[in-house]
Length: 496
RNA sequence: GCGGCCGUAGUCUAGCGGUAGGAUUUUGGCCUUCCAAGCCAACGACCCGGGUUCAAAUCCCGGCGGCCGCACCA
Image 1 (cartoon, rainbow, N blue to C red):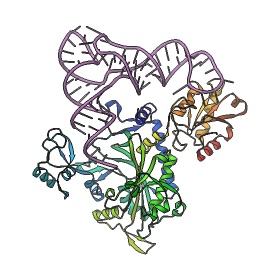
Image 2: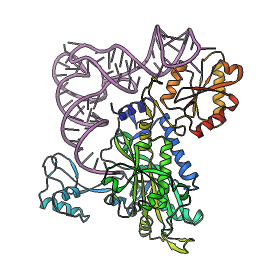
Image 3: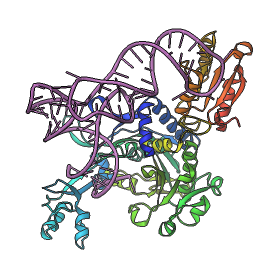
Image 4: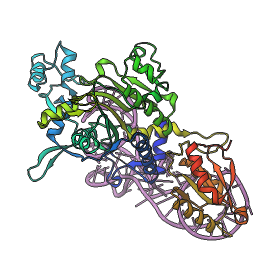
């Protein structure tokens, strides 16, 4: 059995995620998060918020999902997400029309559907799978279409959260210091009407993104704090290595800048992302950044660097970094007929800011994290479990009375109350034997379990069990909250 | 969308013409002083529609859905 198959079974039984609207039958590409999964996803988002917003003093917004067509024309999505397609009249296979024609004859598409249809007719191009007659070329759009108001003015569900940040830029800039650089992030749902979504959370029609746009004066492509990360290393697959060995290399932020792979701003975020994903529980030896080849880089971008992760579903891209220059603001200026340039105090001139974008997918991260954290039965444990980091585990700890009787349950409940009041997320259970409950706690990756035993009633102390080695340490109840917070902060998972 | 395989309790699975059996989970009870103990009991399923047949979970057709490959996509 492939790991992802096992993960999917676990997702169903442990309430990580499951198909949306289940009683009506599955519609592929849509998944709900259950109670346990949502706890984890929330924490992945909270960790991002802490590292990419709070720690940096950046700003966060929430923009609307339904987006008028003109906005997405400006962004390029109406064109970019519309593929020219032909359909076989016999077997109904759909094929990209431009790719098909290009593969048959020497041809450069001019963007017109009629041209493609003409070429197909002139050259008698047939269906590649059955040889049947092909339809005229038509546009197939990957955005969810909707209509606003009684007039049903054309609109789409946003295909990315970024555009809401670009359109908010002028106001946010003015209201929050009117100075560059300015960084604005957002967590939210995006939508892509995939033709045939597969691989569960890896390719969804409705998904969650965490995006950050860093606006700066193009003459000053630097970021405060770069010196702190200059020597820090990440794994990266350079363009040369993609031609060569294909093996990622450890490289420092400084070196990435020197080699021209990224500017300081992007290099800074690469380091930050590496830290984020490592803390979130991805295995550093199973992920790497990849500098996209020139032919993969959009025309408006100076450099794109993706984060790729190895999984049983193959290599999954979970983050994209792009130096988008002034493309987005420039296009929105053009389409809205507004001046979106701002005055730069740094160079005493008006500039259209450049943008470095960090775009991360939460659901794909969630899936990769489950795979990388999954642990088979072993000598120490006769059950499968998840080695989640304390930052993303669904609960901070479990509270278990050794027995239900003799006042142990009541004592345990009072400790749960104390923990919850202190902001510690505690899971309580008195069902079944204590060993069984430890196993259950391991199965959803809770890092610590507190056990209330007979000694607790005598001296008001409890044991803390560490998930990863099963060893226990005795702690006074009055020091419990402090102790747990310390363990979490240090990420300590074994007593040792 | 095409092709191959498939659809039985929450999960895994047996049955493949006579209306379902196991494992696990869940619930209640007994028992239990630390790593999925044991015992008793209970709950719980044949994807949907049509056809063939005395009789369909089982055979046939259609639909819906899944997995893999193609295509599409990141």
